[in-house]
Amino acid sequence: MTAAHPLAVTGSTGALGGLVARLLADSAVPQRLLVRDPSRAPVLPRTSVHRSDYADRAAVQAALEGVEVLFMVSAAESADRLDQHRSFVDAAAAAGVRQVVYTSFLAAASDAIFTLARDHFATEEHIKASGMGWTFLRDSFYLDFVASVVGDDDVIRGPGGTGRCAFVSRADVARTAAVILQDPGSHLGCRYDLTGPEALSFAEAAEQLSAARRTITYHDESVEEAYESRRKWPAPAWQYDAWVSTYSAIASGDLAEVSTAVLDITGRAPITLAQHLATANPPA
Image (cartoon, rainbow, N blue to C red):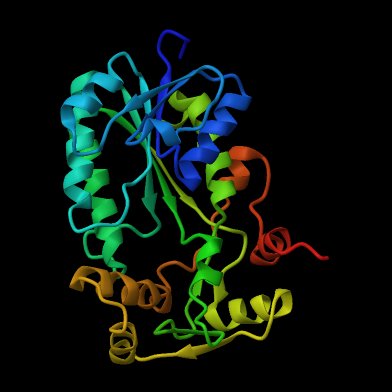
């Protein structure tokens, strides 16, 4: 890649895309930032900002003209996310993009237990069918997720059983993506499972949260109890399915495998939950 043919980065107004954009800027990599709201885009050297929405094919195609490599962060969860992805991929292909680096999900499959992972698999397949080269980053659930599911009563509730998940930090995913984007050809046609260095059950995660904060416990709900307890939040049916299947997928063991991809690609091991919590809650 050269300055005349920068790569494009989506999601720079969000957590993961923003981290990637900043890492690339720190390495003097020219890039285009594709955002819905340019006023929220980070101000970075060697970057240009282009207004586009995943579903706006014309705007996306115009923004990607001349781009060789595209970092595609999955769109926000919604009922039509897969349609947005397909429209965006089609626009990228029409613009002449040669390679897409896409943030997918661990254990993505057409019949994945975690319902949203099915959208990720369908997106992968659409990218493959587009004729563009590809690299898929199959991220595990983020470390932030662990603390986010603690209820107001300091209890984690869900049908996770004794299943384990190799939670990964956004920072480690971003570091990995930034390395790949600086030498994309070496990762063409590769699919990487991006996980943390350990697989934890919810009970173990609660213990670590307790050590870092206050006493947190885990209550293993049945699937029926999980749906019922979440009815207090008005949501469409697909959202309830996603919430509950998050835990069911972990219970199944599908997300328990620990990968070395982060270390292999970046040369630095991913952080643990304990390290993440220590950084988020440094000692007084």
